[in-house]
Image 1 (cartoon, rainbow, N blue to C red):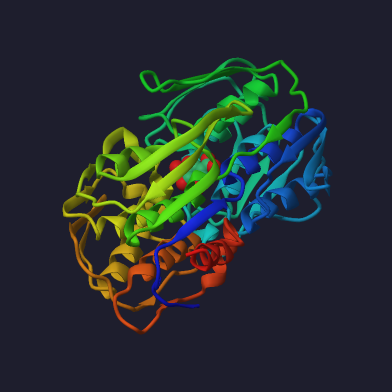
Image 2 (tube, rainbow, N blue to C red; image 1 turned 90 degrees about the vertical axis):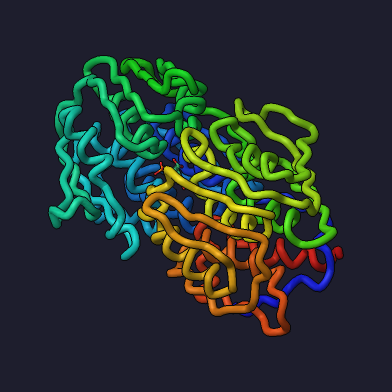
Length: 433
Ligand code: S3P
C-alpha cells in the first residue's frame, strides 16, 4: 500500500480495537471454565480468530450474539481431542499459552502455525513444561513448532525463567491448574499480568507476582467459573496514534478507552520522559484493568535511554518508539531488547533497515538500537516481512515523509493480525483534519 505524507495535522477522536492479549485469554479461560463466558469488545483479528479456531476444534462452542462473544465453557477437563493438527496461524500467544493447557489434558495433540510460527523459539515453553512433567516435544527437534503434546502427570514445581515472557508465564500457570501441588514461577522482571488478573477473577487460587517480587504462584483444585469480560482498547494498537500525534506537526488526537495496565504502560512512561504531551483522562477500572482516554498533542521531543525493567512493558511498541525517536533532539538508546529479534520478524533488523532507507541515523546493537535525531524521513519501499507491527510503525513514519512520493508499505494486509481496521482509522484522522 502506498501512503502519502499527512498534508494537515492529524485531528480527531478514535477508539482502538480490543486488547489482543486479553481477547486471547478470554477465549482460553472461558473454554476451561464452567458456564458461559460473555466477552464484550473482543478483538476480531486473525490472531484471536486462531485461538477461537483451536478451541472450537477441541469441542468448545463459541458464538457471537449482538457483538458479544459467548464461550460455552466445559470446565477444566471438558476439552475433547481435536481430530486434526491445531492451527495457531501467526500467533505466538496462541501457540505458547495453549501448550500449557494441552499439557494437562488426557488426549494427544499437535500444534503448529504459519512459516513465521514454525521459526519462533518454543524451547522457552517446552523446557519449563517438561520440568513440570509434561510430555511435550518439538516434532522436528529444532525447538520450534510443530509441537506434540501427550498426556502425562503434571507436578507442582518452582520454575525460574530467563526471559520476562507473559506467554511462558501463562503456559506454566495454566499447566499448574492440572498439577499435583503448588506451581511457582519467577521471572527476571514482571511481564504483563493479564493471566494472573483474569485467572483470579475466574476463581483460580493464584497469587500474582509484583514489581518487587516477580514470582507468581498457583494452587490446583479450584474450578474456574464463567465471567463477563469487557476488553479495554489495546495500548499496543493505540501506540501508533500516540506516535502519529506526537510527530505530525500540530496534531491533537483523543484515543478513547485504552487499557493502561501498569505492566503495559511503558510507552507512556518513555514518551513522557521524552517530553511528550500526553494526558490520561477519565481514568477508571474495566474488569480489573486500568483504563483511560489518552489525549495526545504534537510535542518537541528529546532523546532518552530505554532499558531494564521497562522493556517487557513496551516490547511490542519498540519499532514505533524507534520511528518517533528519529524526530527527537539527541540520542535515544534502546537496550535489553534482544527479544525483538524473535518476534513475528527480527524487529531490530527490519526497523533499522527500513528507517535507514527513509534517511534516519540509526544503528542496530546486539540488544537494541541507537538513534540520533532529529532527521527528516523520505519515502522508501518498506520491507515488512508480513509483520503487522512493522507495517503499522512505518505507516506512521510515512506521515512525515518529506518528499512528494508516497511510502510503499509492502504486504500491508498483515495489519489484520492485530488491527484489521488500522488504515481506515488512520484515514479518519486525516478526514477530520
Ligand atoms: C503477549 C506477550 C508478549 C508480547 C505478545 C503478546 C501475551 O510476548 O510480545 O505480543 O499476550 O502474553 P512474550 O510473552 O513472548 O514477551
